[in-house]
Image (cartoon, rainbow, N blue to C red; front, side, top):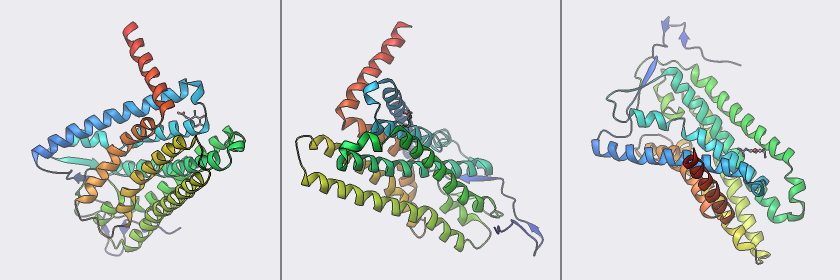
Length: 321
Ligand SMILES: *[C@@H]1O[C@H](CO)[C@@H](O)[C@H](O)[C@H]1NC(C)=O
């Protein structure tokens, strides 16, 4: 494997002088910052609560012990991690004059967001497969979606996430950063970061587009096609129980579009120079993890009932102690 070393021996300079990056944040206007502060704090706390409630509900209600709910609870675990990567720092930074992130912190954000994002992608595909089995092979559902397969899917999701993330990070960590260290956004991500490297990053940009862009576009198309196929199948054999299935499917489709829309925009867009991508990033960081539990629970009566019960128990417990 060839890696371009940052210490360029030809002109004898040590390029790696940047030890931290300056983040410009989302806006300088006090009103917008105030709005963002309230908006993202409320969403962040709600995401934590909502996703935690899903995890607790699914693990504590025996009748929710089915592959579909296990995958959903695992998606909530992923959302819990995902919304905690960039959002808390962004909220703390909002009113600081100078927002900085260390080189290591920046790499950590990139590593975790891609690892978790990759795992989420695999999990969303697994959830589509789960619905495929439930709709097209209902009699074999429990034999096909065995607990062994579910565990395998989870292990696979995290392995793919980690491999995807580390292959990209290997290249980014070794880039020489010598000059400007200002990132016009509120978190570290590759498309903006590699623009700061003191080297020609054209090939690297292509690699990133392939690794992040085409993978997300491919997964997105695969998911959309499978859901279209499932909807068509359902249409053909429409029976009494299909409205419930239909609402589950539409919840899945909404989450898929919310998750992949911004991703595809970031990595396939030629130059990240508009302000739109910053706000989309914000959307991805705080709104998607918040919407997942909302979408899945509002459209699912079983889940809603179970969550209410768990919530009541939690509140009741606190009152007793
Ligand atoms: C994630 O899925 C596995 C395998 O189905 C399951 O055993 C586990 O309980 C799930 N995790 C949560 C938090 O529900």
